[in-house]
Length: 570
Image (cartoon, rainbow, N blue to C red; front, side):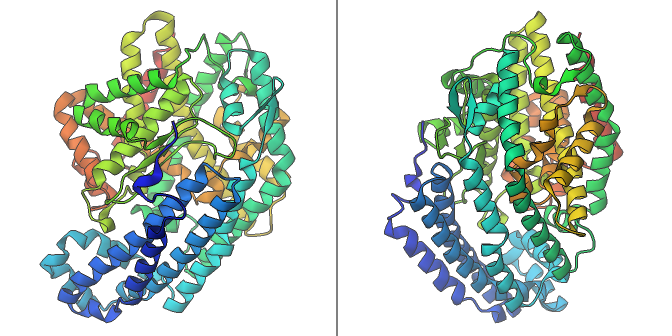
């Protein structure tokens, strides 16, 4: 049940790891920006550029995965530090080429676009060009990369290590964070309350330290906005995701306008619980007996759901189990949560889970395997077109969860079906509405950071105000709920990433609507979206499946589906 990283390197002592980093550095040092002026030479230049990136990314991928299951191991930490330092050396050697490409004279840039050998890099080239107004000199870019090692990257690693040491006492047992979070869904109200007090009490206690981390990464971001001449805090995010700032704001506003759906649901849930309001300790409370889902059963369910949609998707997912590309259970020192590391076109994805033998963990398995299938299919792209742009990053994962729910709903009736429908609504709230709430929190606290460092109480206040806006009068909060922001790692590791979950969810609802209309005829078009990687813009890729994001129709159709789920509850 632990992953096998030997497809990358045999061990941390594998000489191939350091040989790859040496090769990456040699390749990077041998790249000449002058070759951009000759399209024939530029074709070979980009091949060497890709090889340098691949030789550097592979050791970083291995070191990151090795550390993820050994966050308290000094050797794992030292390995990650050393590899990150060498990776930064490589990246700095590539900076002159990247700066030259972004600042290339227009005539020379158009010659690159006209060259047949660079046809499949049009999207990559145009994306690089879009960063030109925000690119500094080569020396300044190198300095910023070096600063990141002791700036945001160091704070991000500290947060992972520090919170990874947290232990929680519940029922006389010492639990990890993921184990105590799972107990917030326990059938026993007493257990839920004890888990709630343990989790948020710890976050409240640690808020002074964690607020210092938040303040540091926020300040780092604000400095970069100023240095790169961005006019809006969302502008670098929009540029990265190939959308407009107004698109992100339209999504936030559209979702906020449907906040009353969340209040309606939790008033419904309160009545089911015999309460006037839903106690915050019961936000995740099961409304009936929730089945235990051991890992083998979760595996069978997910594979069946995938098979019904596409035998090709099922076959890919089976490889993850057969070849040990998953790390399944929580254990001391392993980081919390779940993720899929996409790897490279020449390697393969890996999935980290913290399975706790419940239905939520089964959904997490479907979610992360959805990511895995996405990256697996995108491997047919060359490295510069590989991956999943942020607007599409959550497409396959959320779609996979809905496929699992469809299978389960067909097998259930009566009260059991009602309970699963409620689960589906709660998942929509968590994946769409709460992620927008997180984005509002991040934007407000970041804006406040421009004036001065925020105290823990200031973070508490912004968080509570945003929670109350989302849930309206449907939830009875405790004082400890105000510290929940401190336990959300996305706020430390990324800037404004959480909005992409909301966008991804709405994209999935649009794709799922097409699937309901077209049936099996839709499957090849869906798989083409996943295979496209980043070879085109998100809009161009989604048009293949008949979806146009950010339009009034796009928002209306998505929220209409959510309303139908809510109306189906008795």
